[in-house]
Image (cartoon, rainbow, N blue to C red; front, side):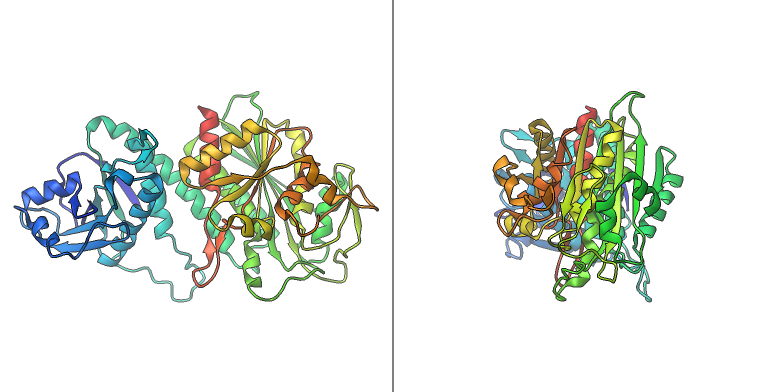
Length: 500
């Protein structure tokens, strides 16, 4: 999709389709008023018929409006003007793109960026509105068709969007918003592509190859890949215990983007990369097991975030660490009751082989110590308990450092890719005690998301750390199942905020 910025009169724009807003109840937006005036009340006369009220989700496509240069006018319901919030704006933009797709127009001009979006006593600026427009548009237009035998691209596909700005002084901010929004959207699309790829293709070795490909494409990214022999030498028994039942060898991928100062401490992003999770010997129920290809969405989000910040050329030092395995039952698979020694030297009794994500993350977290990080964030589809607690709307956040947690929460609010903080109190730690090892890998049914984080916290004593449980937000289930690309927008915004 090609996005451009323009300043001018809406009624004079020559386009296949001009998109304008309509508030409840049939109140014209500024751009719609200009069209109504130029057309000698043509819009007002149509609206009197009651075909559209202006509620969010409504739309009305009009053709050949007199006095207007565009061949179509698309009215988009915007709800009550005084209630326009960031979440409403995102719904409005998404609805407009979905409606545009049905018109057959290959290009369009949108005036929706003129809307006044309120957050408390403040309003969102042009940069925010345009960047959000770009990100939401790209996400709405995203398709994963590359494995279909009849993947013919439609001739009349929306390819260009012109976004109107009220004043020329906003031109620079608008161009920056398009550049940044496109980079973030590209990162989200990459994360979705990797996660949507079937597990017979997307193996640990495939992810390693994709990282090397990224390193060749972006000279600012240095990639290293450790094989099982190198990990064994480092003492990563916990990580390797997960892969030993599979014929697919584990990999530890490191992607370093060095855009900051020479002596700057890095932010380390650790992404869980279980390319398929059967549950191992503690095998999962068969229903929806195909969706366990999404158990590497944490890894995919690290790929997407590194890609986005490299494209944006952010002045920051970031290292992505991806432990990637396949969890399969087999003659050499880990058994419940087995005990392994992690890279940190702590021993772990495996009570459930389906709690494997924390077993690979703990060694990756210990490995991250060598980078002397400013902060470490791990991202993982870790617990079904998080889905029960927060649903698909918010990722779970737990942290050993309050300022870090606040920065992540703020980034989530800014982007609409939100998280909710859960407690990490010492009282929960006793649930993962083991009579035979330093700890067990599960803590019972109660507070499953928290006890999983308690497990990880025992490997994060030497740095500021946050854990994002994205089990509910990383993909959508059901008929329209597919990866969402979350939390790439949140992570990129967090890194942008650190730069400023």
